[in-house]
Length: 123
Image 1 (tube, rainbow, N blue to C red):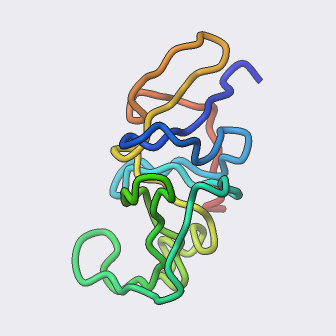
Image 2 (image 1 turned 90 degrees about the horizontal axis):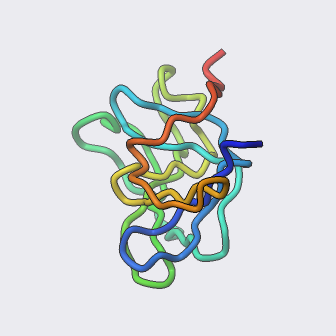
C-alpha cells in the first residue's frame, strides 16, 4: 500500500509498529493509533492500571513503554465502557509519543499529521 509507515518512539527512534497492522485511528478523545501487533521494543507491566480521569476514566489497562528508552508510548485496554470496548486487546499508541516514517516518501512526520485510509473496528 502507498500509505505504509513505521511508527517510531519519539524518545529514541525505536520501531514500535507499522501501519500494516493498523486497526483503528481514534481521533476525537484519545489521539491514538490502535494496532493488532507491535514490535519486541514495546513492553508492558503485568499489573493493571486504572484510569481515574480523562478519556480513560474507569478503564483498566496495561501501560505500554518503549523497551529502549522507557518512554510511555500507549496502553492495552483490558476493560472499558462500551464506547471504547472495540479497542480492548489492541496496542494503542499515543500519537504525541510517536513519529511516523512514511516509506514511499522516505520522510518523517508527526503522527498527528498522518491520515491513513479509513479503518475502524467500531461496528
